[in-house]
Image 1 (cartoon, rainbow, N blue to C red):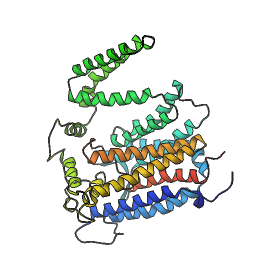
Image 2: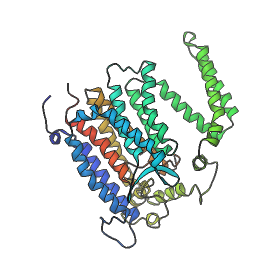
Image 3: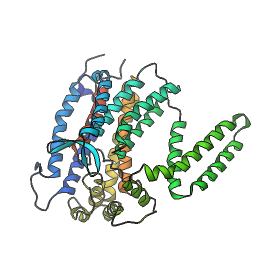
Image 4: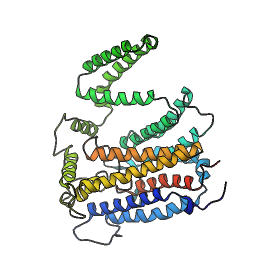
Length: 417
């Protein structure tokens, strides 16, 4: 393999899209956190000042990543994954509690959220595992091992940060690309639908409808394809799942999680309490109209009506100040970045780099989809940041590492034999 320059061979479209998103993200954080008396953009006492510092620190971080031999990431992927798991486990002993969640390590005036870094670490570990020529996802043994690998960080994160744990489900899309049977995705989709329906209707009605659908599918299928055992087991599992939803919802979910689901499903109306964030988010986005109110001119933003606007609800600033057209531009940039990474991933000739590319694209997609759906009131508030936009050094650094590891892989022609 020829020793080619990383600078000359890296994909500048991905790099350019990343830079544009980071710049736009900082501008929206600046608008959402600007005090009455303007100060320097480097004022570390202000949120936008800290974010500017994080953006600047990404430059040497990128240089370091691009300076490392791409094959080092594959060689040390298992070590990186183990370190990330230990950092997640350490939260239970040394974590800092913020707003009822122990997601952070306190580092002086700054905090570190290990769950963000666990995402690219898990992507590397999964790529290493699936890159083994022996692994065949059509065989149950390898299916369970791959799913178990993803489940390890989820089990450590879910008790105190279900939003971050949700992101790891994106890696199921990668497994599907690499040969995981489609019925896994169907089971997951059906479970989600059943869960929501059980919160809206009596479980008995859900069971009866499910029985009708299973019976109809059984008799509509060809006699040679009918399987009474499979149909019976499916019905039993659906029944058990249906009647367990209420217990899980009442005893496993925390009260604020239950409230958010109830608000989303219209079972409760609490515009001054738990539903305040979503209501103000919709007002802010809707008030932007087609072209927006203009940069730094958002009245909802300046009035501080949307809580956590510089973090999870940063897209409301986009909607209010840049309007529908500006929001579409931001959405287009995210979609372009994700599709470009998928295109490059499909071109890879080593399984490791291909799987990692798909993992990076899937993680970015689920972050983007969940966050925008959340601020539009189409998804419960789960604390999922918008990549490159939401305030926070951990998130920005982690997304930078996630993206530029793949940029390095592609630029160094890891895809060549």
